[in-house]
Length: 122
Image 1: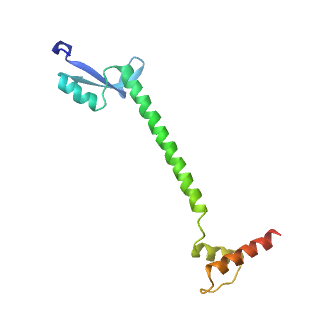
Image 2 (image 1 turned 90 degrees about the vertical axis):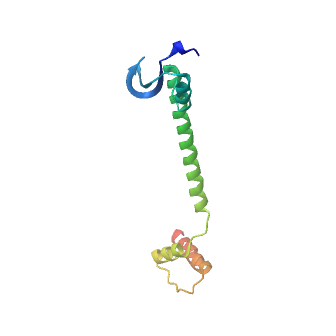
């Protein structure tokens, strides 16, 4: 690019300045080196390029959020398949009015809970 093309204005979508029906931030560069650094930092040669980059960034953010939500849902489902903790067993037994002692095994406590729930369901 020849020096007679400088100074040159670069653009980022979403700034305060209304241009071509949208809003942009602008940056004036005076040399090819300044332009190269600005382009590497997310500035664009034209307003359409800036809008396209903004749309791509939004699409990527939406995709990443959907992936995070899916991962969280999978993690939640995985937690549901784990056996209950001792504290959960004791809380449920207390809720159901099942007497137990500290030495009652988790297995026995779980069986008593299952029996009580079956009894209530019948």
